[in-house]
Length: 373
Ligand SMILES: Cc1ncc(COP(=O)(O)O)c(C=O)c1O
Image (cartoon, rainbow, N blue to C red; front, side, top):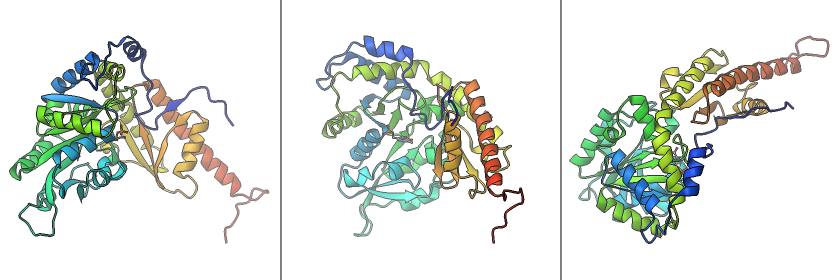
């Protein structure tokens, strides 16, 4: 067992600790009862988010999952509604099927392409109207995810989002964006975030991912949408009293950390370029557009994702297996360039260590190679 002198946690961008500025803002926040509508710090944060996102209003919610759930349920008020969304989207895969179990909303999935998009013609072909056959639910919503996490943090462009928005409008549907990492997309594409979500009727933005706040997401949209969202937040138990304590940290995250996302993207590129030089791995470096890296291990019989992650943990580098053959790395604002270099070097060393140990185990005590008959 090695002595770990340094920890570089690349499991997710959700692992960040509040910065000193966030802690100070939380300690000094002017707070009141937000359920009574009188917390000034929550009000200030929500007003700022609405402005930055180019929408009329905003509401702070405890998590991205609740933000998405509220959005889908507000847009699909009528029972028997259907939502079109990606088969690899967070809402569909990782949110406990809440839109169905809690909201009674039927998901119609479209395949996510490797770049995170869904084919526009497939979206349009999937739309079902109230006057269609008696058998079908009625489509009322399309959901996009930007960046698309399971596709490797890929960015959806303004053009693509607008095209989906046009389809939604043409058919009288709403468009929601799960923008958990929309600021990463904005930074990577070099497009102001409000332009990126102009076509959307609602957006859920996580403050506790790349932006580094300890907790919370925000939902933005029209005034009438946010009024309904506030009621539903109450129903779901998501109203919090002196929530300004959390909004104060989220405000600092918005003001101080958006500009740091580019560093995360640069570090991700550097690591992915390094990984592409390791012959045991396969990685599409062009697909690394933001702060996420997924790489495949070519022969997992000796070097499995679990084994690699365990060997790295002993060196103080934390990664997560993404599948039986792949591993995920996520950069965030508490990872410096030096940490990123340390992680890459550690990965190279861990691979060598595992291969060397395996080759020793595979030899007879006299040094002869063992034959596996
Ligand atoms: C794309 C995406 N959407 C939504 C969420 C949900 O956020 P939360 O964990 O705050 O519920 C996540 C969380 O990882 C996410 O990656």
